[in-house]
Length: 200
Image 1 (cartoon, rainbow, N blue to C red):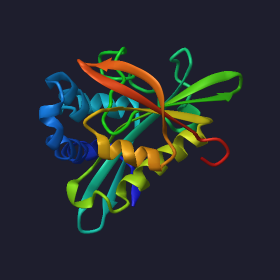
Image 2 (cartoon, rainbow, N blue to C red; image 1 turned 90 degrees about the vertical axis):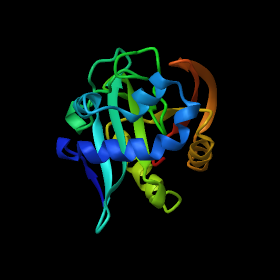
Image 3 (cartoon, rainbow, N blue to C red; image 1 turned 180 degrees about the vertical axis):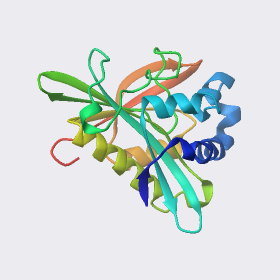
Image 4 (cartoon, helix red, strand yellow; image 1 turned 30 degrees about the vertical axis):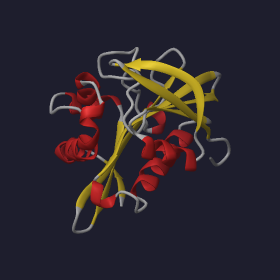
């Protein structure tokens, strides 16, 4: 079951992020790894800035997580009325120049009431035993649905070169490289986008 997470789920969210990313630790800069997997201190900022979802299975508990938010082009909160919160800075809790990459930060732009809106998905992680079994699809679709309901018509996703399996997953789900590359704590961060349109 996909559900909205609460702060009571913080430890489970941290466990998913850390466990899913351990295989990539040596391929990430220390700062990028810390920003991706969060800490007991920064996970609270994630919950304050974004809508966090978890996938919870009977008998297994929380096995996956993802977060999303919506903001307008000027960075002002544009998602409160739809229940999707304003995003933390793209690419790091304290570095707005870095589009944090884990398996997903999504930037969605749509138009509502004359505003260009941006959605952001980041922090998708699934425990290894549940990867390749549809968990990531459920999480991604839940976040996309929340952004679509908030008026977003396009989403962009940032990811890193070590995450080839995640990149293939995003491509299967309709994401395409934009050619935009930015710096993520010394790593290249590649942007992908998808048109959510009238049904994604």
